[in-house]
Image (cartoon, rainbow, N blue to C red):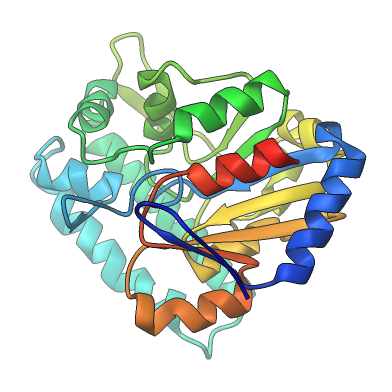
Amino acid sequence: MLRYYGTDMQTIISNPKNFEQFTQVVQSAGFKHLHILSDFDRTLTYGAIDGIKTPSIISMLRDGKHLSDEYAAAAHALFEKYHPIEIDSNISIEEKKRAMAEWWRAHNELLVRSGLTKKDLEDIVANGHLRFRAGMPEFLDFLHKHEIPLVIISASGCGDAVRMMFQSIGKDYSNIHYVTNQFEWDDAGRVVAAKELVIHSLNKDETVLAELPEVFAAIKDRKNVVLLGDSLGDLGMIEGFTYGALLKIGFLNFDFDAQREIYKQNFDVVLEGDGDFGFVNELIRSI
């Protein structure tokens, strides 16, 4: 088994055969047939900062007291109602998907009633609790220079903040496509409604691109895919897309001894240690 060691992480190539085949295919086909498919939280960003796991955007809104006083209790009530459905193995996937869509829509409506503003999201982006991995700006520059699409699929309750993160470092490039939950805003920056496309935990995959023709057009002829994620659930992001060659790279941020083997079984490359984007950059540049 091939292993690469950086300054802050161990890189394990758990499927050397697929790794070599993928690089050969991409080298032969060129960048015009490649796209990157990625999760956002704890994949493009660090899993922890100063030893503390990075919180979700929703938890930062709640704990930072940005929203109305009743928000936390109402959000918790929705969790108590729908989370048991999400994890119940006796419930069909179709029923779960309907429930998850109901949950996310109800939560989006709650955010509207609770007075969410763009300023709230800007404060969260600026507070430093979310931080891109070192090497991410160079990664984004390279993809932009070579016109390689980056499709980010995130079930975050406030997907507008994802784009704001890229804007904050001046890297909101035209080749980046955000498949996230988004809102409509008035001229004063107050939320007025949630946009209808709902991305939740069970439809976080490329099947939703049927509703986003501009994004689908950008990747439909790019059948070679690098998938980036930090959980086994992120492997499902490729569902619904007929790919040619696929390389799955998993960021194993925590619980190394407990999770290492299952990550090795499911990802072609495991990046262990919540480190930088050095290996990914080296890989992309080499092909």
